[in-house]
Each structure stands twice: as C-alpha cells, then as structure tokens.
Length: 312
Image (cartoon, rainbow, N blue to C red):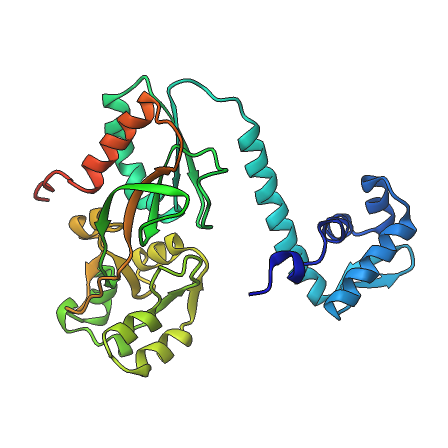
C-alpha cells in the first residue's frame, strides 16, 4: 500500500491551496501566509502539475476555482477544520472528574444521549465530554478516556472491557407501510424505496453486503445503487425513514428505543449478525481515574447488561 507521505501532496502545497481557494485571491493568500504572490502562484502550479488538473481559472486580479478545484477545496477545507478542532480540543486543560467519551454520531444520538440523564442523576459530580466522530480514531494519542467502537477485538490501541453483538435488518415507519397498504412481515424490498448511506467505517453493512450475506442475489444491490435518496451520515438515513421516505438498514441495538416505541418497524424476517460487535474500550497503557471507572461500570451495565424494557 502506498504511504500517505508518497500519495499526498505536501502539507505546504495544500495549505497554500486552501488559503487561495478560501480567499479567492493569490494576493490575499500571500498576505495571509506571509509570502510573496509569486510564491503562492508557483506553489499552486506545482500542485496542479502533481494532480494533472487545473485548479483555478486565472483572470485579471482575481481567480476562480475550476470544478476540480471546488472538489479539492471542499475536502481540504473540511480536513483542515477537523484538524483544527481536534488540536484545540487537545490543548484544553484537563479538569478533575471529567470523562472524555468517543462515540460515532449515530451511537451518540440514538443510544447514548437518551440514557445520559440516568448517569447524570446518579453521578452529578462527574463531568462528561462527548466527542462524536465517525472517522476511526487511534485512542493512544487522543485524549479519550472511554470509547465505543464497532469492530473486532483485539485492538492495537485499546483494551476491550465488554462487548455486545448487533443485528441488521430493514426498517421503515408505520406511516409508510400504511400509505402503501402493506404489512411489515410480507414486504417485498425490491418494490420499496430504499434509502442508501455512504459507509465511512468498513464494519458497517450497506444494502449490497447485507443482501450478499443472505444470498438474496444481485437485484437488491442494484436497487440500492439506484436509490433516489442517499446520505453521508447514518443518522440522516434514520431520520428520513422516520419521515416515511423509505426503507433503511436498521441496527437493533442502535434503534432499540425507536423499535420498542413503534416509531420504526422491522420488515420481514431476514437479519444478519456481523462478526463485529460494539466494544467498550479504554486506551491501552493508561491509568484509569476513579471517574472513568464509574462511567465504565455504568455503560457496561446499560449496554451489555441492560435492564428489562418496560412494556409500552
């Protein structure tokens, strides 16, 4: 595999491009970076040569981005913003009795947030700092005390203290079924509007992989590829399903509250249990403060050994 150092342009070139793209001017970028306008122009030309594509359209006293430049500016700008946010987070001083928790956006929204009032009521002296990010993160350099990771143990950077299996199956809102005059157990997925999502974590299961695991043939995979509704965050696919827009892939643990409340219903009887599980992890080689141990015990109790769900 080609290393990032070899496959990516230098950080200096990307930084110069980001500044010029954001400001819309080589002159303003030069002033911001403390270099000459000629130096900025030279670095942009070097980047364009490396990518074999023009990134700017040069006009008198101004520049505009080409389609390739717009695409790169969106990616580079977003990456720089995320790096700046993480660096600012790492610079924050540590506060006693504070637990930093790393979760995905969906796990935070659908599972953890509804249960946090219970923790805060039981342990009001402990401060929580939630870091929700779908990008895989190495716990060793990160200032996280506990994280929920969906994957397969063992992990190089973390210790798994407990785990819980997950199941995947199609879900939709009762309103959609009522509108189409269908019953959940007899739904033909090929006749349903499927909601697709881009996969950031390779452990998550798209429609194509789900259909392949059940040996349902290529038709469902093709139908998902032609989906008229696709999101880059799983949380948005769930919200679209709640709104009656179509059928999304449901995860039993993540959506257990919505399924129990009847806001979403399972379609058919097919399901897939992946090899990956939810793991409650802490960074390897790091001492565990008392507050972290309290949160660790609480989340193991709630996630791995949950109390019985009361009848609706």
